[in-house]
Length: 410
Length: 210
Image (cartoon, rainbow over all chains, first blue to last red; front, side):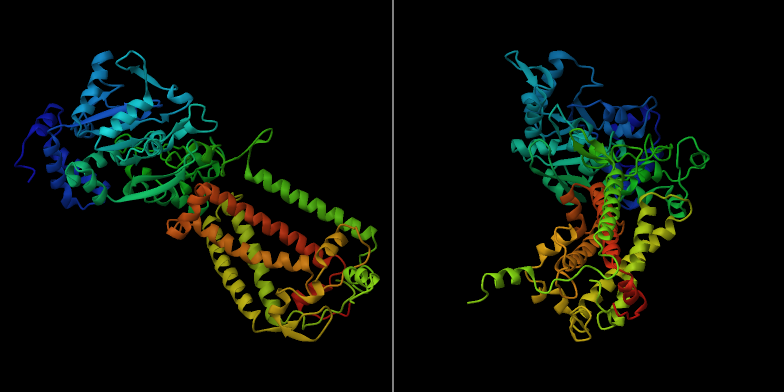
């Protein structure tokens, strides 16, 4: 099947020095990521070939560090994922596009006008100070154009939005306390604006490029360019959270293959966890032996992503493999929920002079106060002479005595 | 309260057993829970987790059995009495405790001298004991919500969403354990403040005359 169409993609592959064999291997890998059997590889190849028509896309950056772009684009050698992503014709991609100034702005306007494109949004939506915390370019009349306006326009016209990275999901670290920029996720913003374009969220900081590739393949392979079909046929998991800015409940769509299990479940160090072999401090012999990082704050048990399976940097490694505890960047409100990163439990934000407090400290105070109170009470009981046979007992309830004094029942 | 005989009718053998099961399970749960929270020595995680899950199932079954038994087993409802009635009577409002709640609080705060007339369980005591029932079930719920095989189940996932994520659920689970620890401290203290005869009957089923 894959042999019949030697279209644009094979030219692209040949130019990049990628053989057809490499390409099909990659398709099998994507099939596995999507939870399909290897038999789906030729279909994927066909979908990608068909996709070589170049699907228009916009890659917009909001309040972002461009780390997700880095994750996507850090290639100094040709890479199959790169070529596949070139199936999307990015008409606007701030960090890597050649266009600049008015030409770049026109590219956005043009794409929006033509419609039928996919919007990839990286970074948080900065709504603070009436949206003036993020300004990119000018409007026709020369007044500054807010990031929120650009997103609203683009998302309205787009077929679907892929929000990549924790910031686009729910505001990420930009939305961490005290969130002066009024950062929020794409879905929360679209809900607020009443824009119904479907959004698929790819978590983590930065997001994993393979997950984005898998979503693009899913779009080309099963969705046939139709958002309704895409939503119907893609295995999605939803998570709901309360947005900190709008206070509204926001329901997020995630690809199930990304958030279906915890990091802990698939962790290569899980055996050390079960054996009770832990790293207690960095630089120790235990660390050198690759023991479990649970005691130094690993948030893997409560973080739902597929990092240990997909891995990063072309599946070479990932955080725990390279010796760092998971800091939970695939979760919601991940900074506030997981800081401090090297402690087992996150701190509770008590505010005021208390600041951030570890649950263990609170528990120690509560336990200590209770023990001290009981000792003090015991001394009081002894001083009151109640120890031994107990206090002298009342002969009637005080209530009854009072009532009797008043003359009892009439 | 002190000065009363402690007869076997107050705590029939079956409740002496359930009390033992509760105590042993609570110790196992707290110890293994602390270990899972922060492994303070190596080589025990698998055992600690196994112990935690085992003790949890036992304590939930034990508690459920204890509730059912309250409707079938007869116990004394008065202090120092051999006269028995269905155990559930001890857990419903009783005539002897009427108007005595604030008097009991005042007694323990040294605001009155004389001891307070009460049923087998005083009003304050009864409330504390009854509160452990929903708390135990709640603790099992929060535990299932952070336990790998069950955390994704809709019933548990809904609670996790409600409290703002699995980390918060973990912290709640941790604090509820501390409620149990403080309860146990106060319980052991108040039960034995006058003398150790209440312990003799509930642990060794040994009667005493005061």
